[in-house]
Length: 168
Image (cartoon, rainbow, N blue to C red):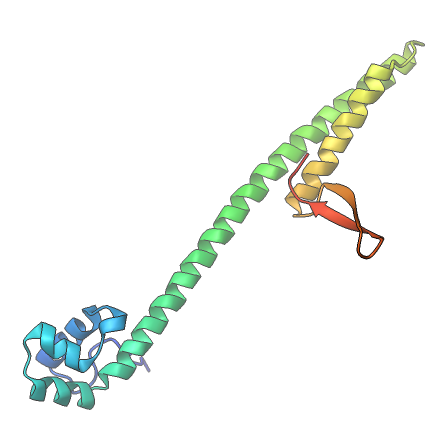
């Protein structure tokens, strides 16, 4: 069974009564009252009060506003999820690319060892930097801090950890 939503025409509500209700809904929330409606619409007070009472304008308008707020929150949540999906996809792409760089560096190191050539510090630094970058990217994608700073608080004379998210 389909239930009529409060802001839709109600059973037994005439087209003219529903039209007046729609005008009532068009008033700004802070000005939405039957007395303000009468002032702005030119409708007789007798008709306005009769229709508003008979068809529960105030309760219906509250339901209308509540549904609008809920809908806006759902749209916002959906937008945030879509944004997060895009960010995760980009981070995953970047992590994959960085993994390939690390694998290439590792292969280069193995090739050098096979040639009885000494591994230079440059190769080790390059592999270490790429690995650190991959680690940071993975933590950033997970929403975790990638660096830490130690601070001392004089009053307590203890060390506290400060987490900085997104900083290299």
